[in-house]
Amino acid sequence: MGSRKNIWDILESRQVDISREYSMLWDLFNNQRIVKSKHNSIYTYTFTTVINDFFLEFKSRGSIISYADFLDALKIKLPRTNIKLADLDLLIELILLVFDELNTLKTRYDYGTAQRVVENSIVSILEKTNQKIVVIKGKGKIIVPNDEVVTTVSDVILPDDEQLALEILGYSHYSRKNDVEAKRKILNRLGSYIEPRLKRNKNSDISFVLNKYFIRHGDDENKKNIQSLSTEEMSELYDGLYREILHYILEQEHKKFQEHVKELKINMNG
Image (spheres, rainbow, N blue to C red):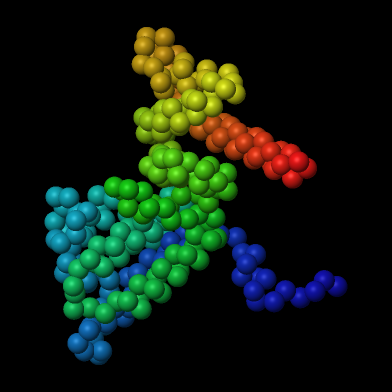
C-alpha cells in the first residue's frame, strides 16, 4: 500500500486550471470588501471604485475616458468563458498596470494590504504556469515564459546591450505570437550582436536565414523568399532562428569559459 499524500503534495501536484485561476483572480480583484477608506474603517470598496475615481489621471489611458472602455479596448474577458493562458496573462498585466498607476497618485483609499494579497495570488499563478514578470522599457510589466536558456542569454547580453537583453526576454510574449515584423526587428538586432562571433566561428544556417529571409536585407531576392511562406510559417522560421541564435551564444560562452579555465590551469602549473 502506497504512502498517503499530505495536503501539500496534493496542492503541488494539481493540474493548472487556467479558467479557474482566471475566475479566482478576477473575483479577488473585484471583491466588494478588499479596499478600505483611509478615514473610516467601516467603509469598504472594490478596486473598480478606486480606478473609476482616478482613471482620468492614468497616464496609460491614452484618449480613453472610462475604465469600462479601457477594459473593452484591451478585450479583457469576463470569467467563466473560454479562457486561455494569454487571457490570464493579459488580466495579470492589467492588474499590474493599475497598481503602477495608482501608486503614483494620492487617494483617499487604503489598498496596501489588498494589493499585497492580489500580488501574492499573481506570484502563485506564475509559479504554476512557469512564467515571470519582466519590465520592458516603454512597455511596462509583461508576462513571459520562465525559460532558463532565454534568461541565461539575456544575462550574458545585459552588460553589453540592456535594451536587447529585455527584447530577448519579451520575444516570446503572447502578443508577438504571429507578429513577424516585431520578431524580425529583434532578430536583426541579435544578428548584429553576434556578427563579430559569426566572422570568427561560422554558423552557415544562422547566416543563411539572417541574410535570405528579409531580416537583414529587403532586396527583391529576400522579398521573393518570404512570399512563399504564410504568416505562421514565417513565425515558425523566425522562432527557430531565435532559438538557434540563443544556443549559439551559449555555445560561444562555453568555449570562452573553457579557454579561460585552460589559461588558469597553465598558470597554476607554471
